[in-house]
Image (cartoon, rainbow, N blue to C red; front, side, top):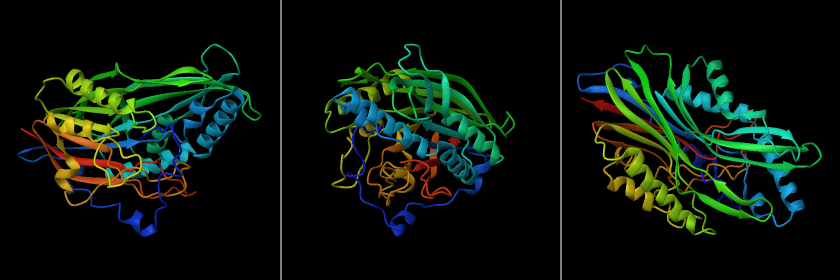
Length: 376
């Protein structure tokens, strides 16, 4: 997602029910749940941004402590109202319907509180998006295990406001989950790796000083029926037209991903995540830069959506206006699964249009599941 440092409600139009219905396309391939053929083995990868649940722009833009405390209280209450466990249950149902072998997750936030104005880090967990999702998966009868978890931005601030009166800490994480219900001869994982990018966004705040927005990546080698591919998950910096360097920072992170994380290997690679870069509808508000997306293609990667759905735009953001309830029409394709090496795309399917029972969108993004075939 763009963890936007700017308001969303003025950026996107409300969706009609018919427009939302058109977003779900395709069906799960019959081979998605296992087995291999003479030419290789199937492997499916979902990329899913779990969504912060609020907008950090009012905090960063606050000019006084009073404004900051009010914005922080409002933002934290919005996160609580977004009902992470209910949204996680909705994501678990998406996973049950599509059965991906590997799940690349971004914005898997951990929220903690501590005594207000206490200089030591807050440790009381109030929301853990990863635990909420794992509990929801168990409730659906699904078995997935974290292969690797990377902590990125870790921010804490006092919120001395009635009803909260605590230090509030948020920690961003990237995660790879792998199916755990198959025998190791069919699916196994090894060599987990993780890291942060050297170039990150640093935003000045009149209250907090300079705020560093860490971004990172995670990877693991996944073996399906004897064939191994490296699966990488990342979340690159979002573009903000009010902060021109964000485009340069994003591209620098993409370059580091290609040169240092992936390097010159020509082995099978599946690159997934929220890249905050890609094709958009003409005239899209806050049109994200496409340079990073093009750099990845120039490095020899295949865009699975373009290969399997060439006629459809495949927009994945924004699906809501920021409050987890009010719909919006996506006009940007920024969530991707790319392939390189001996692996070919079969079908891409988007998820995330359906709301939870109380009317919440699971995320402000749609999900994407790429069904692929590892080749000998």
